[in-house]
Length: 228
Image 1 (cartoon, one colour):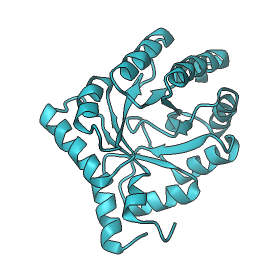
Image 2: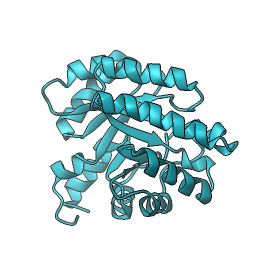
Image 3: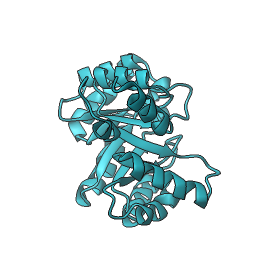
Image 4: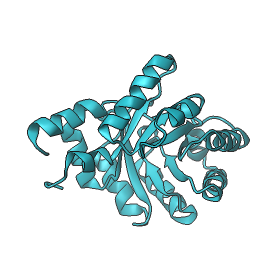
């Protein structure tokens, strides 16, 4: 990791713009910034997918949609429809929020079905599936139980947070998820990631994607320092 290049660092980032009041000029600038920084993916709300996909066409930058975001309280049928619509509009990746309330109420089978159905839609279309746990509302035992469900269903990624809850990514949570999830399931850290040091610690803990809206500032700090 100490020899990582700026371009290699860029491939860790899911560059996020998920505010409710985002304008078209802001989206355009955001897309252009993502291309300039050579990020892995642009994380946007579903309504922005088609615009962003057209804007970054040919650049190699992916576009991902946030589904059931940020509360996870849509019905399963709605999440499935939202996933299908986002993919039809060009989304390369889906980050969906589990129904945290259902999980904490003991409805494990609902969470299994939700994950199976959404991951299946993504698999059919060769789209990356990421499952957002929203760890700030969970005990460590609940996080471990969700890792066990993920081990059964096999999404591409499990993800710490939306960034809209009461807390975001922590090194402890990434380490826990990495320890209890199958090695083939990757971990994404997201929420409250502001600094280069945050990124360094999260990558060292096992995160292979970093979701943040501060990508440019972090990469600028990396460039000025000449690394971590």
